[in-house]
Length: 545
Image (cartoon, rainbow, N blue to C red):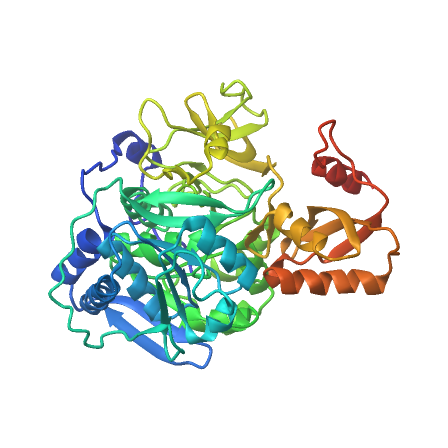
């Protein structure tokens, strides 16, 4: 197969010059986007879901609207109000999308979580966010053991059977509340909160408005994913991650495309994903580097992938050899992109750009992005600096409102007229950005972001641990693997058996993907004068050895 011509951006510079953000006073993604598709193309396929067993469910835009209206009415009938916050923890089932759109429609702020979270993780999120409702399904009920009745949560909602006081949510079932109406939300009204890992504390709450993701992701969907109403798009992402909002919610539906969902619960199986691409005739596809590395190890000639015209990757830099292998097999270049939970796509290898392996691409339409120094000034071409987005004199729409209840974090990410992403890069003479690394210490492993503080806190709960420091070690397969340096408490000696015990302890204390794959016992940790652990020194020592 050969690459198709770009559908939405044949001339990058022309689009950059002409693009203007929509800035309406009122906006609601469910009411203004989903309902518009339902009115104009009621029979068009909106959601195509399948699971590992081959079961399949299909929903048109008209049906999607109906289900989201019912979900909104159901939530309001329980006494929930506009501005209330709902923590939602569900696997990739269609009802997740019904309920999320129901929250958006009713002005309820939804807060996604991954099913991999532990009870401890969930407790923190419920209390930190002051959640008024919890929404889950029967497969995740065990994570809430001991939590029901705590915090400010008034409504415990479950898809499927659950004991009291859980309230059962049944999609499409009559509730007798169909007379409820929905106010049109303001564009700057809170819509979504994500918890994102940091290096010096517990996860921060990233607050997005109705516009910042609902309108902002037109950049992602239209220009980077290059979607049209004729496309079937598959993004590989858990429902708890921001990538789901990018490629499984706002991105595709902003363009009227069909959202293809593959619901797998176990380990990633590259062959099965390729079968889904073939069976569902997927036309555009997004996957994290970890998945791409597994996909190219398959015999791609065994799969009919002719329907695919455009493929992308995001999350961390992709190895050039992976890009080459996929291109040799399919004729398609994997185009990379850069953004954060806090943003939409801000730098991308857009379809009309000449691809350069290893580069993130160029700034998105509607964004002024540069590489700056500590004084907030752009650095010379070829010099490393901080990736930053200009937020003055006018703030771009596709940027978060701020970190909730964390003024120090809000101040730390602002440098003059710039929002500083915390990542470092180099810009070449042609305007292409080249990723260098994290300015902080967040570890990206198997597509997940892991804050060292969370792993270190889990280790410190073990009686044998006095101190610990966690870093990411480069790994060709998973991006980075987690390594822990452990100072033992008096009376304990390091051994392979203790290392395994600590690994199992972390798996049980926090999400399993956060456990350290390597543990090194040390007598002391390098620290600053003020007593802070110098993780950068640990990384430097490791690399030099």
